[in-house]
Structure formats: C-alpha cells, structure tokens
Length: 195
Image 1 (cartoon, one colour):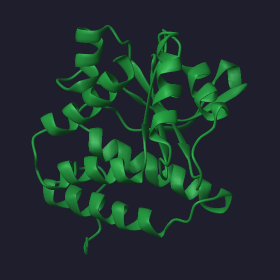
Image 2: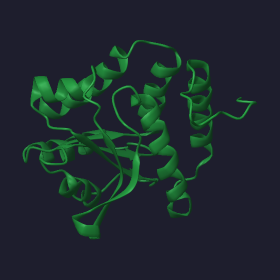
Image 3: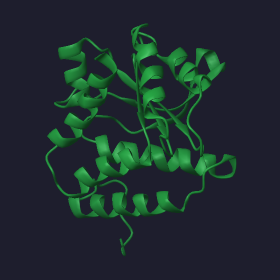
Image 4: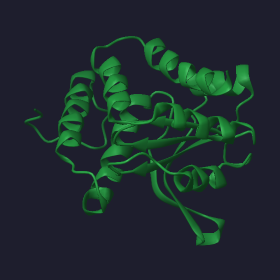
C-alpha cells in the first residue's frame, strides 16, 4: 500500500505504479455489477486500462463528447504512436487508431447487439476504427466473437475484455514482463476476429 502522498507533478516510479495497479485490481473485485456501481466501474476501468497501456496511450479522456455533444464515449485514449501493439496495428494491419475508444459495461449478463452497435457507431476513420468493450464477464464467447466479426466486415474492430482478461493484462504489467506479452494478447484478439 502507498503510505506517502505522491507529488502529482512527478512521474510515478515503477514500484509506485505496481502498487497503484495492484490497488486498482483489489478495488475491481469489490464493485458489484449493475447500474448502482456503473459509474464507479467506468472510472476504475479507465484507470486500469491506462496503467496497462501507459507507454503506448495517453491519459483517458472520460466521457468524451462527440458529434457536437450529441453523443459520448465512456473514454478515449490518444495513441502515442510509440513501439507496441497500437503502432503495429496501424503499420502492419492498416487498422487506424489515432484514438482508442472504450465503452464500459458493468453488466452481469453478456452484452447484447445494442452495446456492439453503440461502440461501432463511434468508430470512424478520423477518430479510429479500434474500440474496446470492457465488461465484467463473457459467458457466451462464441456469440461475442461473432458480434466482433460482424463489425469487422464494416472495417471496425472491437475487442471485448472482461475482468479476467483485464486482470491477466495487469498481471503481465505487475510481474514486469516485457510489453510483448501485452502486445501479443491484443494481437491474438485481433487475429481471432480476422480469422
């Protein structure tokens, strides 16, 4: 646990980052599914996502307004275009992702077509065609993959990550594994959609 207050003008040291990410994961376990804790889940999920990809993505822009305020994205992160999966997706697969769009769903049950459509509508060439749906669990993985493949036909890529996936990615980060484990994880999700 972090005992001293951190000077927010200075970057976190590796041991502090690990402590923060570990605390976030513990907090994730305490959040109940459902609308009551939806906002809490959204904010925590944005922090965890950022900590996992912090070398490659900028700080999350929570509740980003789009279309002159007629729509919102739970959060977006700017692609820093540094070595890693997001740069690789652009250069090797021609998947534009100047920004990565993320929607958070604190549901107990699987996502429906509405959640995929909501994120898909926000994926446009100028913003980026890569999005993540963060959810609590994936019960019907075959159906989830079919939804993602349906969007791929329109040139949009949606990766669904549940708590188990997020914890796995965070553990790669916490265990000081090189970023290739995180990059490979996301690349494998893309391959599942494409194949």
